Length: 152
DNA sequence: GCCAACGTTGGC
DNA sequence: GCCAACGTTGGC
Image (cartoon, rainbow, N blue to C red; front, side):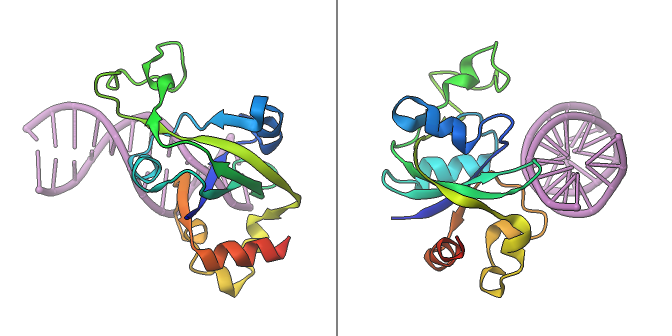
C-alpha cells in the first residue's frame, strides 16, 4: 500500500469533476513526464491512495483523496492526433505513455493549501515542497499522509 | 503576465 | 556525450 500526490489544474479537471464522473472514476491521462510515468507504471498498485492536488489556480493545494483502481495501461490520448496530448512517437505497438484509473474517495472540507503545508516542519521534506519540483505524480510517505489527514 | 527551475531536443 | 536553445510547469 503506497501513498501518492497527483496534480491537476482544476480549470482542466477538478476534484468535483472526478466526483461527477460515472462511477466517480476517470483515466488519469495526459501525463508526459518520464519520472511520473515510471511511478505510475512501475510503482502504483490498485488500492493505493492519492491526494488530489489542485495546481496553477487561485488556491493551490490538496483538495481531497482518490483511490488508484487500475494497474497502469497505455494512455490512448497519446495515439489520437486530435488530442492535445498526442505524441507521434507513441503507438499501440510500442506505447510510450501510461496512465491509471482513479476513483473519487472524498473531498476535504477545505483545501489544504500549499501555503499552509509549508508552515509545518513535519512536512519540510515532502517532495511537493522541494524547490523546483514540477512532477505531476509523486510519492507521499505514510507519515506525511497521516499528518496531512490530521490537518483537515 | 512574469519568471525560476526544470526537462527535452538536436546539432556537433 | 556536451550543451545551447527552447518548451513547460506552476507559484506568485
